[in-house]
Each structure stands twice: as structure tokens, then as C-alpha cells.
Length: 156
Length: 150
Image (cartoon, rainbow over all chains, first blue to last red; front, side):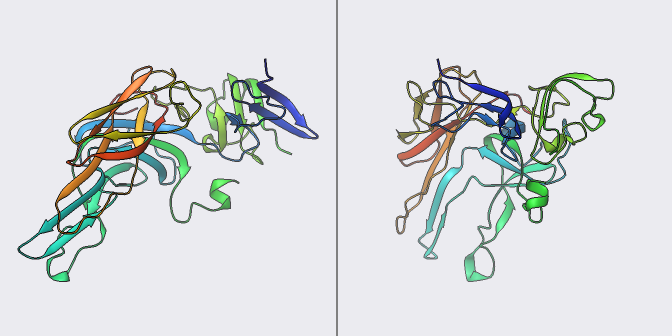
């Protein structure tokens, strides 16, 4: 059986914990490690949730905030592309990332692009609320915010 | 070099261990595990799981596709239908995840959309919620709960 766990002296003056994948020798791994304390930040799942229908969920309500906007992953019934064509106005709209969301320091909110583009006076920007169905999400303890994705916030 | 690992009793008050708490705690490079904050941990054994006050639920992981070490698989789902993805057994409540680029067709109305469900222990279903058959790459994200908030 391969050596899987290295705990303590990792070599030289470096101390920590490394765990390799099944069948992979942690002393000379050929595959990415399952856990490596020499990495400066790992992707830890902090929170999550789901809703049959929602315009937004306060993910921090039971656990508290993180002090930054975190990276989130979500799925709902609009994950993909939506295209509409109005033959009367010769107007065609094609939107990818239709299942997008926005994240704040407290909430995850399903959003969409502005649909009202007739006349070219508005539209094109994301941020309009939408109701997502069969919505599921997880919150990762990783900053995803302007001003927080620097060495001081990510690694120090 | 800072202290990075505690296996045993921690008295780090920033982690709420003023009374002493036993476990495994690992801080980020350059952060002292005896004084670091919760966000400076890259691993801990405190209240792990879906409980109020948990620092983390667990590590972000991708569940291997059944019978392989593959991190993803390609699947084709007809409109209004579902497809089953078989996985290795890493517990229930994993999330089927996909993202893809649609295909533009001039002067047309359609939705090319998918939604993944939470899995059981060894399989889960992904649903075509649009009106067009889609072939997409699907990964399975390790889950921790199917509660409305965890």
C-alpha cells in the first residue's frame, strides 16, 4: 500500500500535513494532493442552501459573514442560454449565463441581464432581479471581491 | 517560522478555545496557529458539518465519476428529459454542476438550459429544463446537506 499521510517534518525545516490520493505515494505524488498544508489557502465549503423558488437568500443568517464577498457556485433551472426573437420588431436577444447570480457579503441573489432593449435606450447590463426555481448553492471561503483579491487578503 | 499545526489541545482565543479544545488545526503559511483567526485556518476539526456555528462544512471536493477517477463526464439530455450520472460513493447530497456555451441560431426562440439535482449515494439526475437537446460536461461537487440553509 502507498504512503498516504505525511504529518510533521515535510523535509528540511518545513512542517505540516500532506494527504495523497488513494494509491498515490505522498512522498512522491503523481496526482494532486487531497490536502496540502503548504498551500496558502484551500477551498473550504463554508455554507450552502437551496430553495424551490427564490429571489435571494441570506447565506450568512445562521453562520455570520466572512468580512468579504465570497466565491459561490449555484445551479437553477435557467443554467444555460436563452434566445428570443420578436419578428414584429426584428429584435433578437441571445443571453448566455442566464442562470447567473450576484453575491454580497450576506446574500446570494439570482439576477439576469436587462431585457428591455427596445429602442436602444437601455439594457445590456446585469443586475436585474429574477426568480430562480430549484435553486441550489454553496459558499466557498474564498474572497471574490474587488480589493480583497490581493496578497494581503488571500495569503497573508 | 510560525507555528502551523496543532494536533491536540488548542487554546487560541481567536478560535473560541479559551477553555482549551482538542482537535487538528492548521493555519495558512505565515500565520501562527496559536493566535490566528478563523479565516486564517486552512483546516480545522471544529464543528465540522451542517451545524450552527460551524467554521467550515468541509473541503471543496469533486466526486469522481463512477468506476473512474474522472472529475467530469459528458452527457446528452433531450428536452424535458433527465439523465443519470453515476458517481463514486462519497455520501449523499452532492450537487451536479454544469456550465456551457449555447449555440446561436438566427431568428429563433429557444432555451438551452440544464439543472442538476442533489445526488443520492451513487447517482444523481440532471434535468433539461429547456426546449433543446444539450450535450454538456458535468462535474459533481461534494455536498454536505440538502437543507434550505446550512
